[in-house]
Amino acid sequence: MHKIIKMTFAFLAASMLFVAQAAALDDGNGGNGGYMFVVDNAGLLTSPEKEKLTAFLTELNDTKNVQLAVLTVTNPTGDDFYDFAGKYWENLKEKSTNFLNGALLAILNAEGSYKFTIISTKKVSTVFPGEEKNKILKEYFVSSSGQGHDGENILRGTVKMAGIITGDKSLRIGAFLAGEFKDFDAGTQNFTVDSDKLYNWTGSYVVDTKHFLTDEKRIALKQYLMELAEKTGVQVALLTVEPELGTDTQDYAKRQFNKWNLGKNGVDKGALILVRDGTQEFVISTGDVDGGILTDVIRENIIEDILKPVFNGGDKSTCLESAVKNVAGILTGDESIVTVSKKKKEAPLWFFGFMALLVLAAVGYFVFNIVKDKADEKKCKAWLATPGARAWQEWLAEHSSGSSGGKSKKR
Image (cartoon, rainbow, N blue to C red; front, side, top):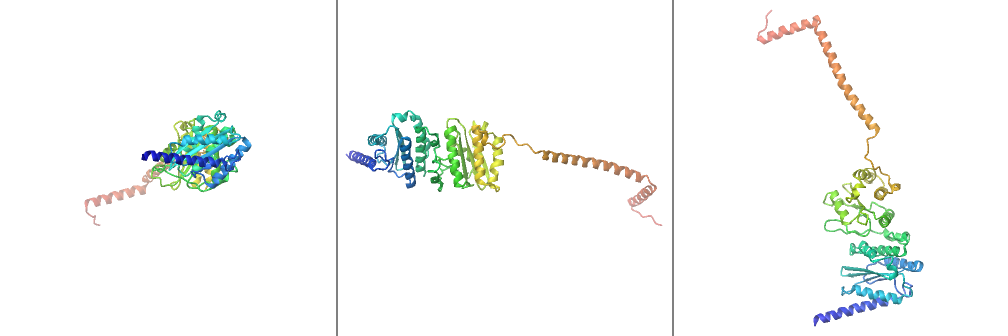
């Protein structure tokens, strides 16, 4: 009996939530038959995020005739989420006067437990099939929800969806749109780490915990790397960290590389550029396949020529951007952005000249000493042949003989 009462209350709660969500469609916020583009009952979006997302989706509807909606809920029953999302979707289509190019992103946050789904019309499903939907969910939500970046990931994922549905590659950067969304990302960064002090994935290929990058440069790099991954499948990430990792830097970089699953975006090409403050260490970690492209020699040259000036008075933002672009250029084969040498550095000509002079000096000194010794020997022999030398030798021998006998000769 108690179980039946509990199930009844759960059903009523879910029904009331659905009614409340459905009623929200008539609030007039959205402009497409009265439905709202963004309903955030779970509170995953900040006010600026919700405002900007609503503006973007409204413009998408007005200019591209594509209707995207975002729904977040805290369903107390949990198990009914997918049915609830389906009902909400049907209600959307009923309320909309023109919902042929539509899709719904629905997210459940029930006490920190997340579920996600994307539903679309048949027309949209032809260009946005289930496989693509699963990629969106995995890339922006499954691995990073609950880590303090839910609103940011919703923005990114929605923009990505819009780009796929419209076919507009300028929208498929998976990041904030240049201009309208650009200033939003300039705020304080938020990072979370696991028990091994490895950084959790936030949907961004730039995690600058040391704030080496200016806001403008960080935003530009995030957009560049997201677009790089979208267009080529190559995933390059930049991470700046504190010195207190308690582990070997090379080992830490490899484990961080694996945690972020870089290079597994269909082409198996990825790299992590790790900058460790304090110890002033640099590591460029790659997968096994990438090691044949981004060779040890190239990585060493990037570190020596581009990264080391970060701690030697160079412009940090410029150095890090250049390192990122060089790694990206090597992995994609875009030589136009590669400035570093791919060959092992050879000593300059002046060095060889200097070494030759040292060798010649050493040989000359050795020969000089031999000649000098020979000359001294000849001089000694010539002196010993003189009368004075012979008299001296006789006197020395006589006195030496007297001394050895222990007696002095009396005069």
